Length: 493
Image (cartoon, rainbow, N blue to C red):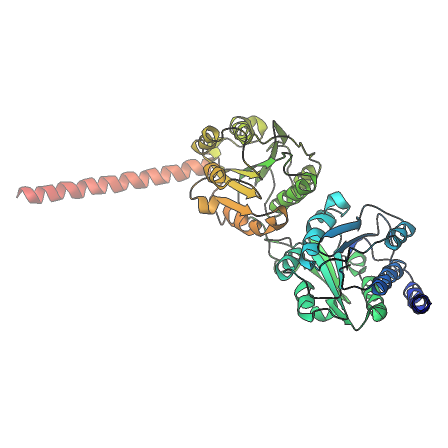
């Protein structure tokens, strides 16, 4: 009877603030938003506390403008493992979300918050799970609610998530560790870290969070001009650039390779070991490379080849003339899911991808040819012959390995020195840290093609320049000949 009375009192206390969240004001019309709740359901969260958190989520949902083209919501819970309650793509109706939250059964194990952030970054915010592609510039927000100290590291993985454009709110309840909350949250910390004394008071965060969301339409309501992403900050906003690129002095545009002319072919591993969700991360990684290139028919041309047990040209060098067209084509690529014939892919690249028929510029123009091979495992065929042939053909080769990629194979594929042409990431979620190295290597003003000038040897200016160099050399040769004769004459005396 005493336990029943406790539950009745609890439900009585919960009802007013759930309604308060719902009735706090008009529903937020924020424009598109991808919102993922990361809920701690470790054993330290008592049953009645978990019930409070459940009601908090339901109340918060009722204040959001939910829909496929508005706010998409996903929920994951974690303890010693991570479980998706429902992904961003699952529901477009609030009633369905509320039903899934009310059916939620706590995991009641440890507190692996770092693992949960990693899952949110790699899976929950993936396009395959319903997040909108980065080029649509839809804000991504993660709300982490926890009551204790993480049993794993959170600082590094949270930094990676923030670098990918995920805005993190860290909500600590009761026994939560403030240092860990600050390590997870986005800056400014005073706007993204919340510490409440008990689960009964978590509605305070709900009201503040809802008010923040309600001003998020600032970027949608002004002509911000941000090249990549606009982020609202109270009554103002700021522009962000992708990983590896810097915001320019105008505060809106992002730097990219300048004045460079490169023919770049990317060979992407589509074998079954990659897995569909990781292949989506690979495509996003490719588009981040495209972001820092000056893509145009006269500038950088990009081609994409996918390989597994066979090889398929997704699009050749000459097909697309803008970065937007290339990125759209990358997103449309379908995953092959078979074996890993890297040698066959290298052969295809050498024999076909850099041919003039597929859009490569004639060798007489001296446009650098760059091949970038992306793989996650050991090749099932021999790579040595065609890796060597690629370099003999003057193709600058880069090798990017992930997970179980074999270092010896990466080094054999890559040009010398290997330290500048081989990159490795332990998993697909940490690939973005490779972008800066690739940028400095591939960008013409910083890497292999510095000073390259796209000029026809038959142009008038080129002929005049050649003539001038030749006459200068002849004059120098004649003078040297006269001096040499004079010196020999002196010796004879």
